Amino acid sequence: MPTCEILLVTEAEVKSLTALSGNVDIKKFVFHIPIMQDLRIKQAIGNSCFDALLDAIENDDLTALETTLLEGNNRSFKGAKMALAWWVYHAALPNLHITTTASGLGKKIGQGFEGASVDEMNNLRSQAESYARYYTDQLIGYIKENSDDYPCYALASDTLSPISTDGYEGTSGIALDWEDITRPNPEHRTLNKE
Image (tube, rainbow, N blue to C red; front, side, top):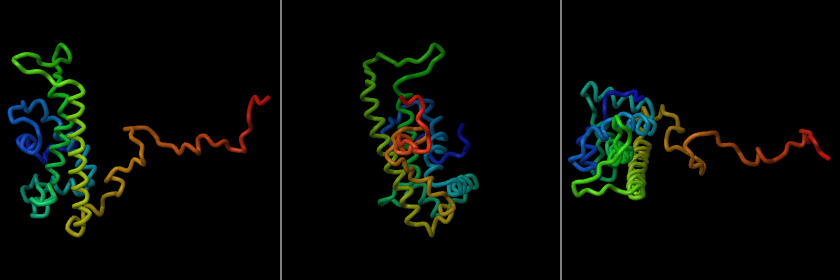
C-alpha cells in the first residue's frame, strides 16, 4: 500500500506529460500515482529527499531547488514529475484496455472503436517504460551532478539508484554465483559412489 498521500504530480499533469488522452477517465489511472511515486520516485531519490519534497509540498514552501527537482529546468532536465507521469502511464496501460467489474475482467467493444491487441499494448508499455527509465535516470543524474544543492541525497544509500541487476532480469529471488553452486567442495564425501 502506498505510504504517501501527498502527490508529486496531478492527474492533469499525467495527461499532459504523456500520451494519455485528455478524455481518459481518471479512475483508470489515478490510483497508480501514489503507488508509482512510492515504488519508483522514492526509490530513485532516497527517503530523505523524498520526505523533504513531500514536506515542502505539504507546507506550501517549495524552494527554487525543490521546484527544479520536481518540474525540471526547461532544458536538458525534465524533473521528477516527468518520470513519475511516465511510470503512471506505464502502469495504467492495462487498465485502459481491460476493466475490472463485478462480473470479472472485460474490455469494451463497439461504437467504432477497436481495442488494441495484447502485442500492441505490450509495445506501448515497453515504450512507456523506456521513457520512464530515461527520465528516472535523468533525475538521478541531475541530483548527483548537483549534490551540493541536494544534501539529502548524500544520505541515501547508493543501492537505491540506479538499481544494479548485474544482468539479472528477474523481479525477485536470490541471485547466486553459479560457480559456487556447481563447483563440488572437495571436503564433501560423495555418497553412493560405486
